[in-house]
Length: 384
Image 1 (cartoon, rainbow, N blue to C red):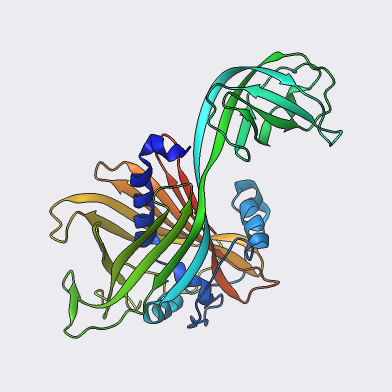
Image 2: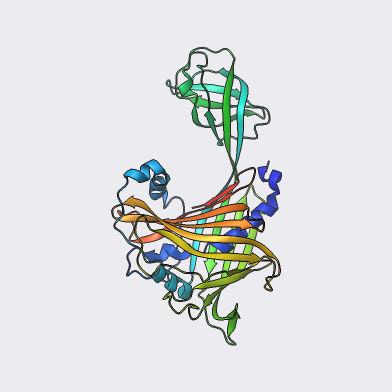
């Protein structure tokens, strides 16, 4: 069952990929070094979850506020403007493993539950939870919270936690509790159940051509422009459509419209084939000085329209950056884009994270892209 069907499966997937086409502005960062003097290379950058396993594990901990408080402030610096200028001229390619999720919260559920024979691990007990139409599959995740009473001979603190699900049937499933219970009778479990459903998997390939001057000259919003083609190709299992390609034409100013700014080739806007037209409300900008831990700021505001005449606005996107702590010799670079519809309601938040393992990597690379939707199912797309 494709659980995206409850939120218009194909529509959501199409919107997702247009977001990637629109918002992966910094995807080529994988080919850029980490110091202020680094420049991009011509080599295509390919990232996969297997390559990034170690640094992703660190990232999962480093984005926790408590962990951030005790991490050293990285001394490494990164020049976004140097990278940007090089990537616009040279283009890039990246490949990532894609996973899609949905989330559902069921507060205050009373479940008829029971303990079964201990697992092969003598410190665990298999617990059956009854939940009618839970919609989970084997491998999905459930977080149990709010349990305040012991269940049979199991102290309640062992029942609160996050567990992997093994399906029994459509109305019940198994989880493993880290406690060796002895009693086997049924009991009522009062708890909050929060599910993380895995929706689909696949691969995404993103390619951007070098941004070139044209003959005759191309103008975008009145500014002479370099033009690049940005293509997203997706091969998916479990989502609809299973194969999809989206193409965006991107425009970069030949000369910075603001004379006081030094950034070369600032982003002006784009046209998505079969989709929206978008332009910067205020000129796209990146810091001229190298960034370090704790730095953050705005990049620009993008307005979306049904057509280039800008008669009908469909949404607004706010772009920002933040440099997170990692170690004293490396940082994590977070690029955020918050997208709002024409009613100024948050629709989604896209985050790209770049980093490098100081023991292995000389260069920074894109290690994770996440799109989180502000819809009832809290759908999420992750590319690593």
